Length: 406
Ligand SMILES: Cc1cc2nc3c(=O)[nH]c(=O)nc-3n(C[C@H](O)[C@H](O)[C@H](O)COP(=O)(O)OP(=O)(O)OC[C@H]3O[C@@H](n4cnc5c(N)ncnc54)[C@H](O)[C@@H]3O)c2cc1C
Image (cartoon, rainbow, N blue to C red; front, side):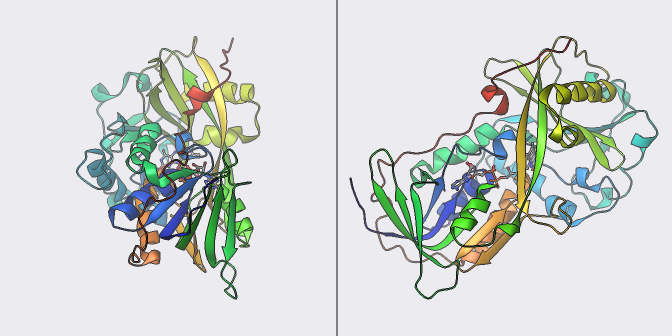
C-alpha cells in the first residue's frame, strides 16, 4: 500500500461526461491544477445516450416564444464548428461528425403547420426552406422541409478525444467505498478541506486538498451533495425512454415539428459493424417513459410511419433504452432555461442542461474559481499507476436484445 501526502489543487472535478471533460480541458489549458474523478465509464448517463445535435436554438423557438435557452444556445453552433474543425479550443478535430446539417420538417396535417413562426430573427443559424428537389428521400411525403446548419456529433469519439488528452488527470474512483471528505473545522457545511481516495484492489490511497470541488456528475450530483451534507432538493430528474432502429435505413438527422413540439427527433449513426442505426427521441421518448419496450417500439414505429413516410420499416430491428436527464430543479419541473452552476462554501454544483452548453458552463465555473493558485507540488506525483476510466459504450453497442415487429 502506498500513501502519498495531500496534493494541493485548484479543483477536483467529479464526473467525466461532456460537462466535466470540457471543464477539465479548459482548466488544464489555462494552467489550473485539476484532476477529474469518475466513478463509472466516461459519459455514462446522459452524454453517451444523447443525440449529439449541436443545437442553435430552433427547436426551442418553435412556439414562437424565444426563451432564455434559445438565446443561450444561439452562439453555440459557431463555437463548436470551430472546435470541431480544429480551429478553436478545445481542439475537437478527432470527434466524428455524423452530419453537417439537420432537417426540420412538418407533416401535411393542419396541426403540424403551427409553430415555426417568429423567433427566426434571433437565431444565428437561420433555417433555410428547401425546394422539393433537395428534400432527403426519407422525407419525400413531408409538408415542408427546412435545413438547419446544426452539426451532429458522435458523443463517444467526443468523449474519447477529450479524455485521451488529459488521461493522466482522470482517475477511476469507487464513489461508494473509496471516497471520503473532511470538512474544514468550524467552516460552514460545504467547505471541504480534503478529498480521500482509496482503491479496493490494492489499498492505495490518495489525498487531495482542493480549493474547490466541482460536481459535474449528472444525476450523481445528488448523491455527492448528500455525502457532502448539502441539500438534495437542488436537482430534478426527467426520464426518457429512447428507441433505436437498426437496418437498411437512409441517413436522416433532425426533427419533425408538430406545433410547438418535436414529435420525433431522428439521428443517424453506424454501429461498430457498419450497420445503420437510427436513434429516435423527441416526444416519442417522453411518451415512452412508462411504456414497456415492446409498447414503445410499436409507438415509435407508428410515429415514424406517420412522420417519415419515405422509409420502409418492415424488416428493421429495434431496441430501447432508459436515460434520465439530470438538471437543476425548476419550480415547474420543466426543462431549465439554461445551464446552471451554483457555489456553496467551496463546492460548485453544475449541470449543463444540454450537451451544447458545456462550453458556457465551463466558462461560468471558471469565473467562480478565480485565477489559478500557486502549484505547490509536482503535479502528477502519487498516482502514476492509478487506474483510468474508459468511455461508456453507445446504447446500441451495449444492447442485450434487439426486437423485430411482425
Ligand atoms: C436521450 C438524450 C438526448 C440528448 N440529446 C442532446 C442533443 O442532441 N444535444 C444536446 O445539446 N443535448 C442533448 N442532451 C442533453 C445532454 O446529453 C446532457 O445535457 C449532457 O450530456 C449532460 O452532461 P453531463 O456531463 O452533465 O452528465 P453525464 O453525461 O450524465 O455525465 C455524468 C458523469 O458523471 C459520472 N458520475 C456519476 N456519479 C459520479 C460520482 N459520484 N463520482 C464521480 N463520477 C460520477 C458518470 O459516470 C458520468 O460519466 C440529450 C440528453 C438525453 C438524455
